[in-house]
Amino acid sequence: MNNVCMPKMGITMESAKVVEWKKAVGDKVDLGDILYVIETGKSTIDVETPFAGTLKEILVNVGEEADCGVTVAVIEG
Image 1 (tube, rainbow, N blue to C red):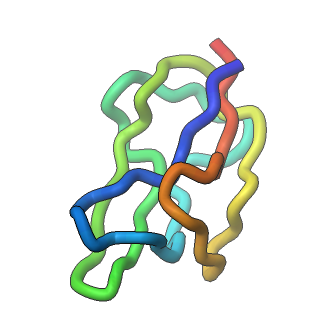
Image 2 (cartoon, helix red, strand yellow):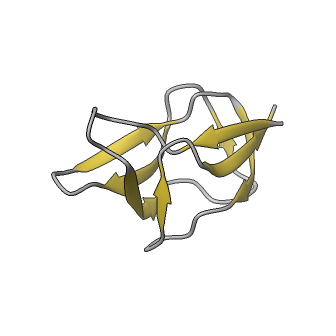
């Protein structure tokens, strides 16, 4: 199991809101696929999956905010 964490996209970024999941639980994902989209105070950013495998769990739902470094999903592979 691999934890996917909220990325830190800049020095001042402390958290971000998930605005869309591009993959659903049970979907196969490849390294570099767009997994989800986040919104910071400045922009909307596509986040790539850092692992290949199967998306097993989504821990932060659309509309929820998470601090940088917090696990947002789990990929098995």
